[in-house]
Image 1 (spheres, rainbow, N blue to C red):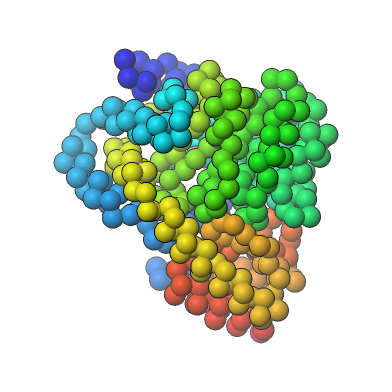
Image 2 (cartoon, rainbow, N blue to C red):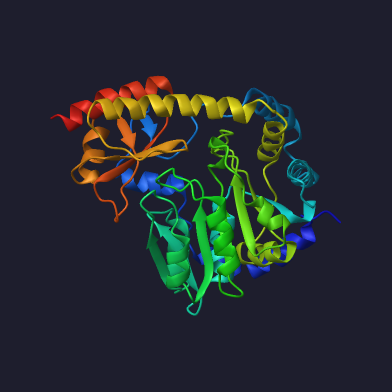
Length: 369
């Protein structure tokens, strides 16, 4: 029987009925909420960590080819995608589950492993979705400031989370774009409370050449790794991701979030993207070049930023960041939101060269007004 059979769908859907009461605040939802009002059709959108390059040519061709068969569920294609990824990473296919992006399994992980007795521990600033879900289940949310190098302070997280059910590491971190060393993640896994898990969100890992936490999953540790095709692969609007963990952990998580058949366009686009060996290195190169040019321009003009290894970075506005966001939006440029722990900093997504040039013009106009 296929892993994603109709029988498993009915079983998981029954277990997931309570989860429908929770609103999952994804990255695009958070960005849209922060905009406060609709944007023009020609606006520069560098606020949601999207990839302006979009799907690769092989991915677009794969989607076009599958459209005539779009009237069939074709769940075997989902199994095939899991097998392709598992083979590439040296994993048992049972350790890989295909999901609609990486945010639903993150939300379900929080539902599965936190409670009023089991806290949610995260870096600060950090991606908000897990915190929001933990609050819904009345779990204690423990926000631990990042280190001076903007890495997760794993020792402080352990000290603050003796009752933890879930430790969340986004690597590179959203919103700072900075890395937490693999040795620190291994220390966290080795010293965490019994029955807790570590979720490593690798949504942006492809923009770096850093080591993945997947090896910890292979070693049988209490680790969940999340991947998405929304970022470097440019499939944000197509929706496809991966949950990588021991099978019993994946089952517990999916029971909280439910299962539905994947869109066939998403599955074939993801598979085609994985099969293209030049895609990730080329897009990593393009992103790094535009990012570094922009950071150097900011530095030349007297603006402080945080060195990033992702497709976004943070800039110090020296005044309330929301005021700057609102002002630059009037120049038809949408930049990222503000985190409470860093109220004078804003997050900027790396766009195309043309988009970043428009950002620079608008930024100077606003900041020197």
